[in-house]
Image 1 (tube, rainbow, N blue to C red):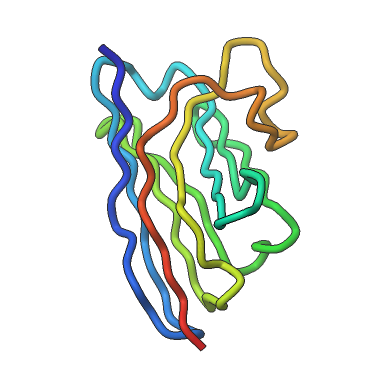
Image 2 (image 1 turned 30 degrees about the vertical axis):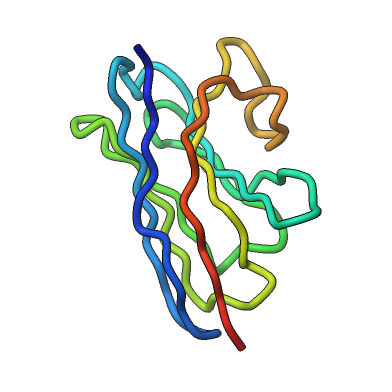
Length: 126
């Protein structure tokens, strides 16, 4: 059974940092690109960042460029999202996900991703 589990969320003040982690079980993360999405109450799920299977390519939403960094450790089957200079508009549930085979994961669209974790809440106060 494939499972993705996020951790590292929490509450921080604006300007602070958090590091999210995503561990996988029943699935070898190195097989596919991985991504982070987020969803705020009343809003659609949006792509935040994604990374290729071996980590050689990364893409980011314009809203997080220069502040967030996605990385992965395939030996540990773990994907990370380092979030710096957090702002209240970053408040959301953050989800880890694996790209579907053959899909254009760099578009950062939910339709190109398959397995999803349960999410971890990030709350940024002003």
